[in-house]
Amino acid sequence: MRDCYTLLKGKVMRCKFSRKYILLTYFSLVCVFFGILNVWGSDQGESGARVLTQGMSARALGMGEAYVAVADDMQTLYYNPAGLGRLVHQETGLMYNRSLMDTYYGYLGYVSPLFQGTLGASLATFQGGEIELIADDGSSRISNAEQDFVFSLGYGLDLKELFLGVVTKMVYSTLIEEYHARAFAIDVGGLFVSPNEKFTLGVVVQNIGTQLKYSEVGDSLPLSVGIGGTYQVKWNGDYCLLTSLDIVNINILQMHSGIEIAWGEIMKGRIGYKYGYDLESFSFGLGARLGAFQLDYALGLMGELGMKHYLSLNIHGPENKKR
Image 1 (cartoon, rainbow, N blue to C red):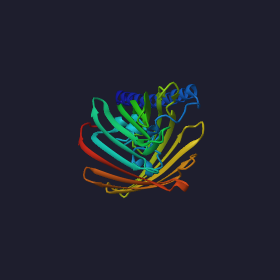
Image 2 (image 1 turned 45 degrees about the horizontal axis):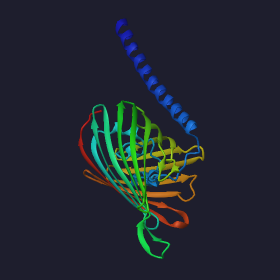
Image 3 (image 1 turned 30 degrees about the vertical axis):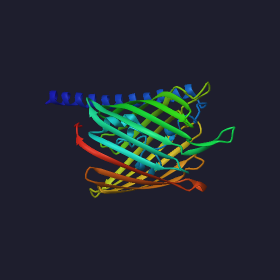
């Protein structure tokens, strides 16, 4: 009997040590990420590749983009690559945003479990509308004002309660169809999920990379650091309340907060709020699930400039990984 007790006690101690090790690793990553922020500083520009600053998920945008720790669908490739490791299905995602004036954003992505994690790839674009250019001789022509493209390839590793991920990006941009620029960047992220999945913590550093140079002068990519957490409550089997809070770009204190209420897998309602932005504030969203198809819509308020509309579709494929 004493031998059984000793054996059981040893297993419990090893379990506690394992969880302490996971938490220690996670918070060590937090320190490393904020150290990167201090090295790069707040002088990093935000003018290069506007597509890197725009949301790519109607669900996330409906929740005020408080998404660093949500990380449970394929758009985590964009918001926090660590969440890729949580995914057990193949998934395809598309997003369309008709923005201000005649500009728009588009997104296409795909993820699939592979080995001890999940591999993902995506293509995002920003189309800046048309502009009339008048030459010195008085002639004119219509040109695309700006076109940005971002190709991303990422992988998230599943270490059970701890997930780690990295994304590499290639950015290609053109101005008035004459000036061209390229840049390369990476995102790195970490995610801790409690054993009952009620509580998550996430951290991500985005757009660590080269400058986007159209000529001799380059624009820095919009480097950002985000840390966030979620808490969810389920009741009556079919209902779920998910709350989320992110702190991003701590040098100028920007915060994202969001709430999602789910009625089973069929309907979801969302509300979000962004603090520290000149234009963006409240957002609202709805989601509907029918079989393998998840359709989401979001509406973002832009002050005197009106509203922005977002629409995204996720298609869930077969399960490739057991957790």
